[in-house]
Length: 536
Image (cartoon, rainbow, N blue to C red):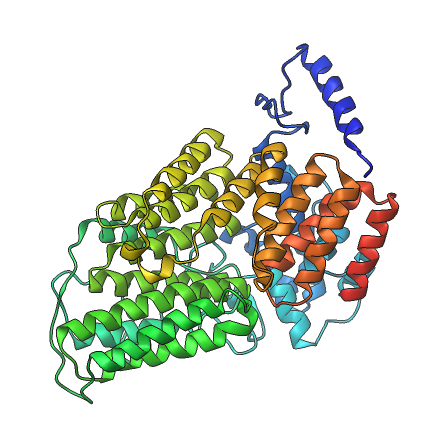
């Protein structure tokens, strides 16, 4: 194995000299560098630099109001829109006076700089798949587009380009409300829940539209302070009993275990069909109060699973909508741990594609709201999401504090008391999460033994998880300068990713390619990139 860490050591010595300190090193932002961080940037700056190179930024609504962008949209020319996007003054503080380069846009889109140049200067692209792909990647507000995204109706509301946004359809019976029931749950509430899910299916299939932060904050606050409603017996419709609900619960468990082996791109439609079918039972059938509560729990669990698999398929908007609707169902069922799981899973998504500080608040709220009812294993899971959000936010102290709490709660677990949906949390998953947090925090030396130890005993059938976790190990190895070893690990991640349809795994592979670019003259790196091109 060739070790390329000497270059890091040389730069570190130079950094110490420039700061005037013989032993302490500082990031360019002024933050003190941790002793186990071999790089010249703090974890927050490393993450910010990496994130803006692997994905476009989330932009304010005002970004899209320039005359140049308006003219490009009026001309229905995606290439001109891209040119105006790249040269927007908003990008100057981050990307420099030239704005975003064609090469970087090409990296985001998965095409070459030459292809971006041809599309910008040539005739207006007409292929709908190409147009939709560019619109989704660049986070173009759907209401500005001159075409409908395949299978989805364009949003009516303007400015849908923030992390959270949802504008319900106001036709027919009026808008469904994202407000928790506080007195009695009646058939009207069941119809509204079904309407929310139906409207969610009409959201643009994109990564930039979910719920406004204000709506999410209100929803989570209501969950903390509003008591669960009483369920009113439903007498109209076909009578169903405990036997049918038990079958629904078994199907939910089966679907959840399918997610262990089938990626979101292949599973999300099946989960969504089951969710809408179960919601139809709640809305149309007749049942007693205990059966109604079990149906609501099943719907809440299906919403969590639907959010997870649609997010894995790259549709973060729809995923967050499912999580929010699931909170309504879980609250109505009086299942605080399930509602907390939904909120903390949303926090996990926000950590990855939005503002980590918002994610910290969501994750901590979920943990707080369920602490009286959650089992130790469930508390461990909720603390994992707190740790991850803090790691993404660059707060090492709070991340390590949460990781320690994960271990402490897990030691007191009793599987007999646990909800079925927490079955997958085990010691290997806990080690993986800790390793991933340390990669985010710029401490790869702490991450490598945790990740490699967990992967050594991981179920080979769980392809997506192995692809993801192997990519984190490869990133840690790159950070340490162990390039030959990292390329071998990255190649394994590439081969696994090629077998699945997972937006998460695809994004991780793009990150590894970016991380390896500085070593492009190394033969092993060149061979890896050639293999990527061959498989792509």
